[in-house]
Image (cartoon, rainbow, N blue to C red; front, side):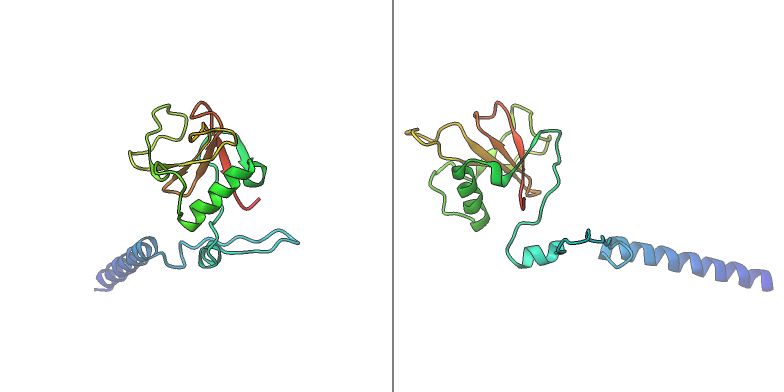
Length: 157
């Protein structure tokens, strides 16, 4: 009888452990939370605080493309980034349309994942060649030459 009871207790403990694991994975419980320690002298903001404050949380470069800081972009590209953050209104009717990534230079994603936005080019009568591409994961890419090359945009820099 004692051996049966030991097996039952062990089985119950296993069931409880599995339930706790599932709750942590599905419910995003504290078991799955990751904490980071800020570097000395830096100010720490959680991603939730950034979203709450209306800022776009920093996104890691999901590609092997070179990175450019948003502050290094041409003035017109920074203005387009500000419009994207506000949700418009956009000056061109093609802004916000799907970008097909037919060149295959951005990370491969399903159709409809990327949207494109015009970066005005001084002296051009039309849209010019410059664009910002935004993924559903909030990653942003800049092309100065109409999709011939891309750079990942590092924001908050």
